Image 1 (cartoon, rainbow over the protein chains, first blue to last red):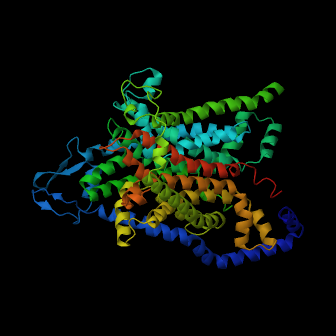
Image 2: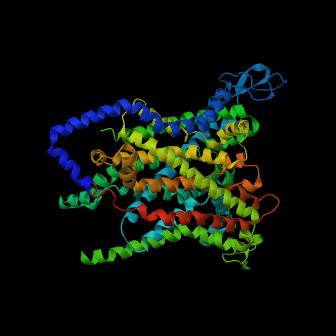
Length: 335
Length: 276
């Protein structure tokens, strides 16, 4: 392996090596913008065309009126400039009232559900991501060890995640049905999806079951980068298993863990299909995305405002998470 | 101590067995529901085992040409999206991992923004866009959409793997006369194999499971992917729970095959030994 021997040769000829390196850095620098263009262009073009367009369109529409009856009772074709009214509708629960004045929305109006949906969504996110991270970490540490049947376990825990949510939610309907499998097995007679506590628990169980493998596999991949020598030398220094986990494993899998937690959080914050199929958002399970879907039927532009607000909330949380992980993912590699 | 060490592989296998059972048990429910007449699925009182075994459900589904069309679409879409994601994400991730450039953090955050809009609010704009391009009902439309929305994860995860490889490795290859492309291909990619395998699995599964975009962009029944197609087994008019669950179980097979093929590359001390 010439790869292993070359750095030593370079060290031996230290001064010339340094000069060579500096020279190469310069050539990289002059060619960098061209290289950057070549390497980043496919991604940037795809993002601009496929994702950028609908996002900008949605933001633009959020400032327009929806068709419908206006305050004086005339039909309004919609799509005229509306300023921040759509935003005020969601954030301040202001609805157009009689005679052109705005009043606070009556209860039962979709606008009135906004803040509760924010709370429900964040609650789901915290609970599921926390559970998935802890269980996923245990699975990953276990699958990292050699034991008989490891390959089988790995495939088995992958399967839940390989089934479309739309289908798995149907399976959960059968399982959580009052006449269903779960009550049958537990010998209980419980209406799982018709009270808010059990309905939320059902959604959390279904989600944890489905996506814990996502986190486990990511952490497992992250564990591959840690050499055994580090553990061995820590053992020699008298570190116990707990210390080895906190001081070695956790810091070294942090980049993989950060990606797992950030992407999972963004996913749950946008969760839609699972609660929609299980409860149609009833019994305190209306997430922000479900509210968007409901609003789509009664006004696209107002729905756009809602999804923009949702985006801003999610963006703020994402920034917080990146900070929380100490910008490890972002700053790495430029040492 | 020695006894404990000798027992360890067995208790791990035992825990593994328990986990396997927990994760596979809903599939047992699915299998049992596939093997009973549809009316029995939600019948009262419920029965754990089918009251009447119906063995031909899988045969019925597999000989259904609609199902085979949906399966074909899903395979085409998932494979193509995964290839496109790899082609676009590897260079981008490599560059962000190796170069300090202005807007580097901003680039990573912009990429992440694709994961912050609920897809349901974007499909209206996407439909309009593809309609203007006369690309509604084409494989290309959902392939490119799936690819674009999965780039973020691929870039973030690969970026992490690339930057965890010591720069010395690359410099050594460079001194050996490898150009950038050859270094990336022959040195960096083999070292990031666990990352690449992870990316392939995640992208494939995400594309395989995508629902909302396909529902909107694919109106033609023969070109629907499985996720959209199988919903027609259980509608307000007809309820074929048996066929729905049989179809869902068959739909897992390609993913399991893919994973079984590349799973061994997920684990293995690849960085060990390349640099001392």
